Amino acid sequence: MEFFIAQILTGLANASSLFLVACGLSLIFGVTRIVNFAHGSLYMIGAYTGYTLMQVLPGAIGFWAAIILAGLVVGIVGVLIEILVLRPVYRAPELFQLVATFGVILVIQDLALMIWGPQDLLGPRAPGLRGVVRILGEPIPKYDIALLIITPIIALALWYLMTQTRMGVLVRAATQDREMVGALGVNQAWLFTGVFALGSALAGLGGALQLPKGGADLLMDFNILAPVFVVVVIGGMGSLPGAYLAAIIISVLNVFGVTYLPQSTLVLMFVVMIVVLMIRPYGLFGREEVAGEHGQVGEPERPIKPASSVMRGIVVVLLIGFVFLPLGGSSYSLVFVTDMLIFCLFAASLHFLLGTGGLVSFGHAAYFGGGAYIAALLITYSETPMEIAFVLAPFGAGLTALAIGWVCLRLTGVYFAMLTLAFAQLVWSLVFQWGSVTGGDDGLVNIWPAEWLKPTVTYFYFVLILSVAGILLLRHVQHSPFGFALRAARDSHRQAEATGINTRQIQLIAFGFAGFMGGLAGAMFVFSKGSVFPNELEIARSFDALIVVFLGGVKTLAGGVVGAGFFKGLEETLLRFEYWRLLMGLLIIFIVIAAPEGIVGSLRKGAERIGLRRVENQ
Image (tube, rainbow, N blue to C red; front, side, top):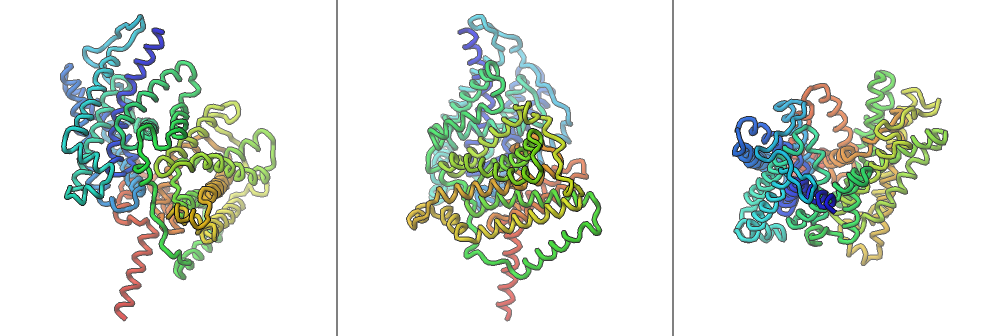
């Protein structure tokens, strides 16, 4: 019993930083509707800033002053991010803003590297709180006891701010109906800025508070991101009590998981999220009205027009260039274009879900990596011919997508997106921890194509034919009656049902088809590289696909392909520089602000304006 109580107290102490960061994210999302992937970066800045100030300010007073000042500094950083990056794109589709926050992540990563260097920083001990105290005979760190006192005080202060002050009333009103708040004369711009500053300060405070329990490193932004989103979703988007309760649940379960079932630590919180959302589709304290407002990324232009003669000409020129590339290109250029074509098909498969179906999946890498692993496992353990393994891989990925979609399609918006992420993490953890079969972190190697496909030029043409055919098939399905039914289910669920369309069935088939095409890209990838590793299933791979779709343009059928080509080319160019993330992040932010419709959408609008001017002049 004593050990059991000690574990609970440790879990409660660990929940402090997680609650503060999740609380800030929940506040920001509830008012601004921004899915802020840069929130982990604000947490990291808080840790680094707190560490620096603790070296300057001496003694116990200096330690606690450093933590408070770190929160204030990060709050100011949040104001700058909101005004300079996010405010210009508030009128863009809501989830388009996640691309801007991803650009912020890249910028902050390299700025942190420039300022504090690559080495991990060990957090200092809290003055006067070193050592342990014994509770029922079990040792509990004194700093953990301090956190058990501090966190409820902060939670009560937030409760008072939200319930007893004018700002709190405005925040709660904006969470429920921000349009009405604007109609009443409230300056929404400064309300958003204030909430973003408060949420950022809480993230910075959480990062500084955890220093004595950990430290500061350049990976902590991504390490905290998944747990924070899980906590916010379990608690209910926009709910502070929900975030507090969910942080406690996740932290306590994680402590017991480490002790009794260490193999579960990578996936336990996602299992909890899946269970909660199956019982409470909008989180413990979430509301359907809030959840239902998110996830709509805008519909394509109506009616969907056939490709213009200019666009067809560009496509023909590109295809001719690809066909003749082996004649003048080096082996390196062939490999690069092969990778780009595979990534284009992967992005196009996600665009089919996101643009046509309005289904924002945060876990699409599960099908890309899944297809790669299915082919690799068949080759490794059953000596299946490459051709058969290649055919079976996309079917396996498609069946996986059908199974995941059958569960996830009960939800909508961000809850749907986070549930797809949870299932993708389940697949990743299975591959990562089942080392005896999948090779674990070492992956599977020596997965090469058949002899007739081994030459680089031959495999390039193989990928070119299949990638172009796959993209054309996706386009054909989008223009087919099935594609129009899918758009109807996206645009107006009730009206589509009234006309006799089985919207859930249509969306499930679309989910499986997108998974099939993603698995096809994964099968081409594994035979191109000759190996596959768990990172092809990670969150970062799914985010890459999301980013290129939004960069290219959600409202246009060519968005995923153009975005993927642009992203790969940009990455290849900037990787030559030491601080390439900074350059890429700034360029992404610039494109988001300058071309909120995406690259293709903005070019199309510009062409239409030129055409209208010519007509007017005539």
